[in-house]
Image (cartoon, rainbow, N blue to C red; front, top):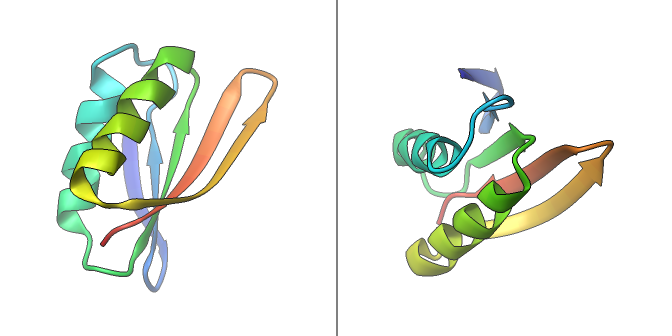
Length: 81
């Protein structure tokens, strides 16, 4: 797991190699460290984690800005609300 600031208001969370529920838990923890309006890029490779992360965002109100999938890698952009 890697969490880092990329630039002002932009963060990266790399949870490749982790299985449920860890990607969702790490995403929730990372979003808790962000200020409203900041964006978290989440990289994961466990397809079922996408459902958990999407449901979590629906419940918290955080906005999924973009969802990309390439060769088994998922890259989502989530804005903290």
